[in-house]
Length: 214
Ligand SMILES: Nc1ncnc2c1ncn2[C@@H]1O[C@H](COP(=O)(O)OP(=O)(O)O)[C@@H](O)[C@H]1O
Ligand SMILES: [Mg+2]
Image (tube, rainbow, N blue to C red; front, side):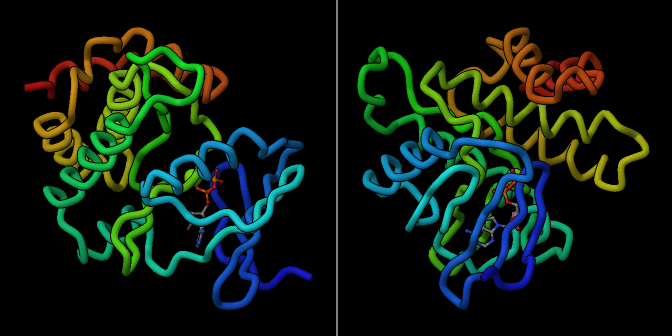
C-alpha cells in the first residue's frame, strides 16, 4: 500500500510511505540497479543523497527529504539567485572531487548529468541531490556544462515564466562553477539532445551559455 502522491517529475512519481520514507516509482519500465549503486556509493562517501532502503525493478524506497526543491525555494524567494548558483557550483565541485568510481579512469569522476534546481532538495541537513538516473563516470566538465545548458534552455525561452531569473542564475553559476563548463559544449549539446530525444532546440541555449561565460 502506497501513501499519497507527493510529487511527479519528468519520469517518476513519488509517494509518501509514512513520515520517514517515500516510494519513488518510474512511470516507464526501468531497472534502478545502476542508480542505486551510485547513490549508495555516494552516501558512503558522505555526499548528500537520500538514503536508499530498498530497490527492485522500477521502484526505490528512499529516505523522505523534508524541504522544497531549489526551484520552489527560488520561486518563493526563500532562496536568492546568488546563493542558488553557489550551491549548484559547490555540489558539482564536491561530487567531482570524490575518489573515482571503481574501474573508471583516474581522470574521470562520477557525474550526475541532470543537476539543476528541480533535482536539489533544500533540507534541514543542507542541499541534497536527487534523481541519479543519468549518473555515470566521465569528464567533470560535461556535468558542469550540462547544468549550464539546462539553465540556458530556460533563459533562452522568452515565453518562460522564469526566463530572466534563469539568465541571472546562469551568469552567476558560470562565474562560480568548477572546471571549464564551456570546454565540451558540443558534446554536452549532443548529450542533452539524447536525454530529450531530440524534442528541444538547443542551439540558442548553447549560444546563451557561450554569451554568459566570463
Ligand atoms: N527522497 C525524496 N523525498 C521527498 N521528496 C522527493 C524525494 N525524491 C523525490 N522527491 C520529489 O519528487 C520529485 C520528482 O523526483 P525525481 O527523483 O526528480 O524524479 P524525476 O526523474 O521524475 O524528475 C522531486 O522534485 C521532489 O519534489
Ligand atoms: Mg527530477
